[in-house]
Image 1 (tube, one colour):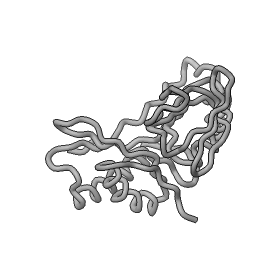
Image 2 (cartoon, helix red, strand yellow):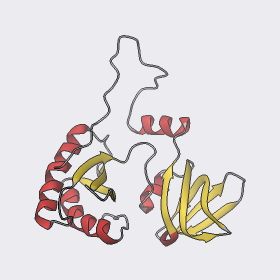
Image 3 (spheres, one colour):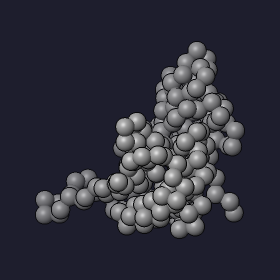
Image 4 (cartoon, helix red, strand yellow):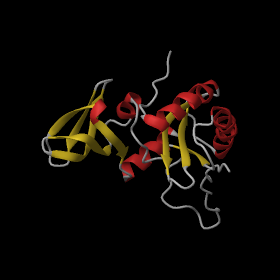
Length: 194
């Protein structure tokens, strides 16, 4: 079974093509590559575990070491750059068909490259998707179908329902508030490359 990879362009596509085989061989799936900054660019790699288990700090470290080695050899960016590896998070970007299908019924935002119905930005409930089209019920109640190739970016909106669904999928108990004696969980720190 082949893994669907997100679509990228330019430098991000070259980086994704270079690192995806390594990430997949390690048991992960590439969610997004994003390069930001000009003076000292930051390469951000977002990944999921292929087995669906929760993404941990150790996963970030393993991917960072492996991807860092690949990028050192490929050398897609001249000069100094930084590497950040993270999970896609709860309010994740929607980059693959499976993301749209898995989160059907949840609220999302989407920005298009070319306006549709006189708009570039939409917000609504995901109805479903296939390889070519995404379907949403907009906040104002109308349904829309958008070509996947026209989506510049899309992501889930953080809602209580999304948090509950994510916790249930991870097998976490329902918890309104942590006990006063429980330490707060630490957020994973992104890996950095010099």
